[in-house]
Image (cartoon, rainbow, N blue to C red; front, side, top):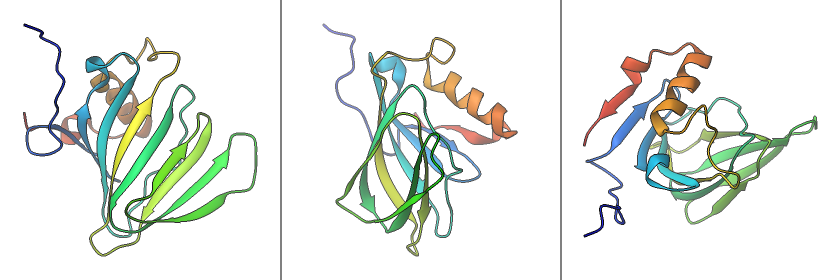
Length: 151
């Protein structure tokens, strides 16, 4: 019998990272896939992700709940584009694109995110946990206060 996992939970029995700006509920960690990872993102009303970019991956968001604002800017460009986002839309963030999501609804915004790594994962961050630790260290956040294992 295969030990490979094919079906994943999207709530309750998950690994949660509760960052100061948003929550990531890990659905498919990168260690369970060859070149992708999936997670739910929750941002409270008037909250926003910090502006950031990914050099090694592209992202797809499926907006599930709430309304928000997406800001994007290609690396090396000065102009930021702004888009209204709402449920049943799909957002594509190419590599090297600065981006930020703001939650505008009273209940915040929730979306399903797929990260795709066409050239494989960064060897310095082969697991979800290693990536989160690097991000937390870069921003000066406390990893122990962010990680919540609900499995």
